Length: 213
View 1 (cartoon, rainbow, N blue to C red):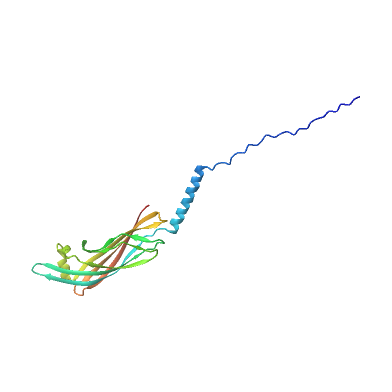
View 2 (cartoon, rainbow, N blue to C red):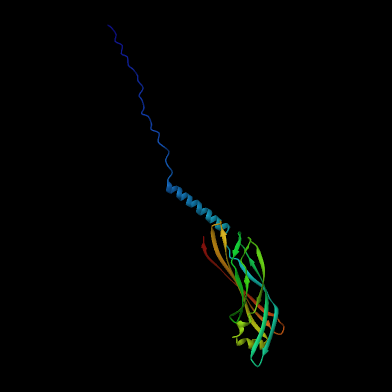
């Protein structure tokens, strides 16, 4: 018998080619969220480290530089010349500089403005205190209508009040500007005969205003 030889061709099965897919694109909303979260963290850290604090305005002393008082009994008129020296200090407790606007120190007699001195705008470096000396001069025309002044001068004492308010801003990250203001006052009594301050009572009021950029 003739033998039949069966040849089998073993062909390797070809696997289908795998398509190369492009890398997934980052999610835009996810990136925005991460960016916003990062910005919030930086902002929180900045305000924690550079937390704005209100400055402190302090009237340290008030002294009489010049005082002349005379009474015309016929006209029931008081002639009063008064100049006060006011020493005050502005303290900036912040880690950044504090810039304040120009203002005035005020001299009041029984609630009426009778004198003022200019306080020029300036900048105080971080954690520094700036001493200031002002001269308050009485404006005599402001007292023409004050009938009670005669009785005060005759009694030998003149009650006065000095008041100063400073407004300015501190800047965080060179973007956020925080407005602050600080006020200080001093009630004092002046002896006509001794020409000096016999009593002084100091007070301070401070307030912080909203953030503005």
